Amino acid sequence: MRVTLRRRLMEVAQPVHIVVCPNCSLTRRGAAFFFASLCTLTFVIAGLLSLRGMWPILPFAVLEMILLAWALHASLARRYQAQIITLTDGHVSVESRDRAHCRRIVFPRHWARVKLRRPASRLHPSRLTIESHGRQCELGSFLTDEERCGLALRLHRLIGRINESPSLAVGPKQGRSGFRFG
Image 1 (tube, one colour):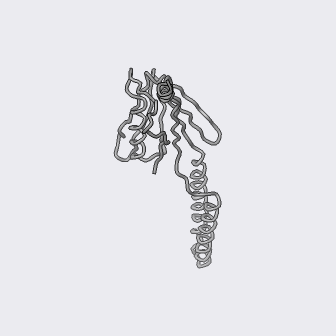
Image 2 (cartoon, helix red, strand yellow):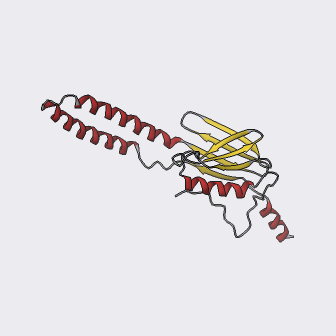
Image 3 (spheres, rainbow, N blue to C red):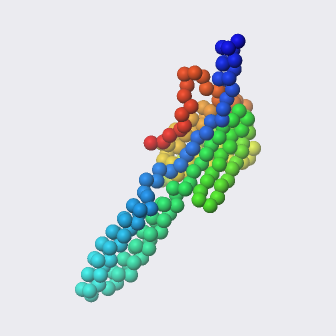
């Protein structure tokens, strides 16, 4: 009786959560130090050259620092992006978050399919989507192609093909560690 109950408890599948987020190792303090040191160096050199009569360099240096500030701001804002993929026996839900918005799309797991589309050109990245009933959701747009391919394989094993729903139950020798990139 005890063994049967234990086996039944193991067969009950708990939701699988996969969290996908970009690796943003740059901190605000690090970005501020980098920006301040680069501004100091750039304006010292531009100031010395403008004193020697090459004054047109100064507006371009200011423009360059404004562009660098914008790029650092965009890089720091990217750290708040995350996608949480939750798989249950009946549904696949994708919750996309950034600093201001949170969007959730739910697909029936039985009809969902994972597609990894090749890029139109070598310079473009591939696209990973989950599709069902005419709706689609792109996953991991901030990942590299290798990471996106690994995520596609993992999702394909968990979701299966159309009309196929593999079991999410974990046996005693399998682990339930989260998907990690790196």
